[in-house]
View 1 (spheres, rainbow, N blue to C red):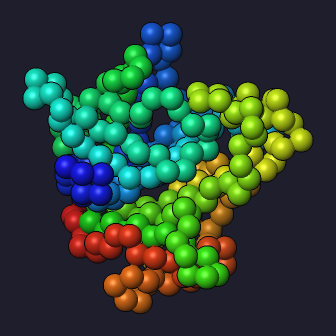
View 2: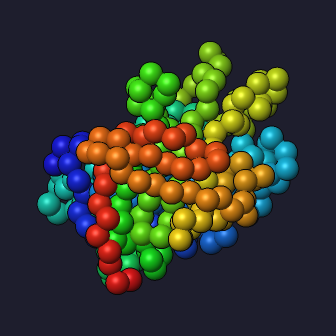
Length: 255
């Protein structure tokens, strides 16, 4: 399977992480959502302990987006899910984001780290199957950007990367908190990265969690309409109007 092939149906939807175990940690409180369309993903992670009223607390959040690849290089091992990150709230990693995946049931999957010692349990949210849409915002010249709008069932996620580049001293596997601490004068620019997640029902998008805390609980009127094979229009007070269609599947599912 190549990097642009659709992934198996069993991965579609929105997944909530209910458990993370590492050699030194057991976490059941971090708010985590992974939205997966047929190819594209978005992920947001908000620690329950982070004081997000401060730059340091906001820097503890994680989030990223890109394409997803499912392979099975070793038939004796479970299949491998690789999240190919195109945008990332945190600095670049030195190793791929990949895990062995075992489905305990259609709506529960266990992930075991390949490049790090961790174990995660993911549970699919009801109402997250059926519609799958992935859009890329177009700039004023009609060129696609890395800003994304993803829909899975009744859920919508907006991902807008920061506009500033990483400081020259940023190294692989640095943390955003570390970079912000070294460059406090650039903190707001480095933190200017939005991933917002919520429900889209009857044209109303209610933001449940966002990497920009001020957006949480915001209610916006949002309409997503396909103009033709390549272009979609988004009516919203805050989102760009013209988007490139990356994926558009609107079949319904009784979940």
